[in-house]
Image 1 (cartoon, rainbow, N blue to C red):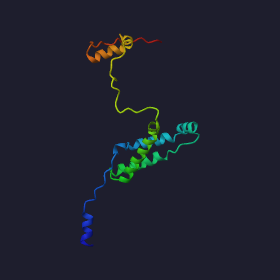
Image 2: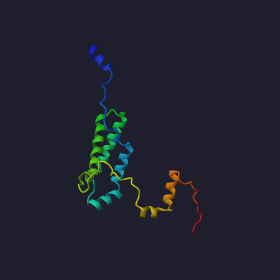
Image 3: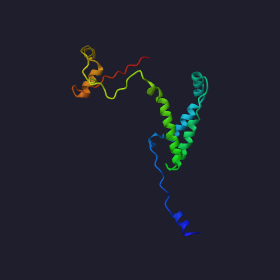
Length: 156
């Protein structure tokens, strides 16, 4: 055995690259729950009714296995972690595809200037002496909190 190989064995392990977006990794049991739900009889019936065929649930199972690998390695299995993050990203993009494709409405960069203006007089009048107005005044400190009357009436 050479001195070089001994040094190689006693060296500290190389730094494991850190993953970004680890917040996207769910607890492992949720991937298993999603897979179980997706592959249940009830879900399969629903999928057949809506889509005319079963949907592919294998990605949930793959994510579960990758999550377990990632958790067992205490976050050092970068390959498994990045696979989960990539899967979650794809899932999020699929879910938001219709939102991004919607060109009917112009998206705002900030709220309208008059978003906090007072309500019209007719709406203020309709709101008078309602439970909502009373609670709002209590929260603002304009009215003394009142104990709510409890009814213990039961119809048998």
